[in-house]
Length: 114
Image (cartoon, rainbow, N blue to C red; front, side, top):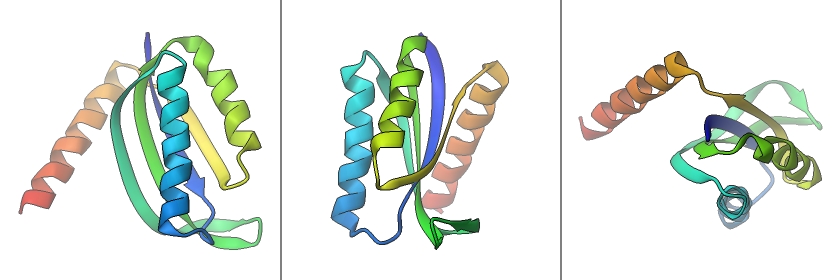
């Protein structure tokens, strides 16, 4: 089982329910294909660096999960088929990436408590 991190951008013209439905669909895909969701972050509506499909903003979402390596290709196909997702990036986490992710999570938790 490898550890992966996926960041994807959902089109900004959707309602909150539609965004939640899209994120839920991706989480279900991971669980249905033998993966285990470890962490999820909703980064909210952010400005894009450059326009994508004539849109200058998008809803960012991060999913961190453990799964077998065979899940990545079908997941990429699912992203391509999903019209609501305009960009995505999946990376396999090495030990340094995992340490950084844990520190980032601890820092965000401390900021939210303060």
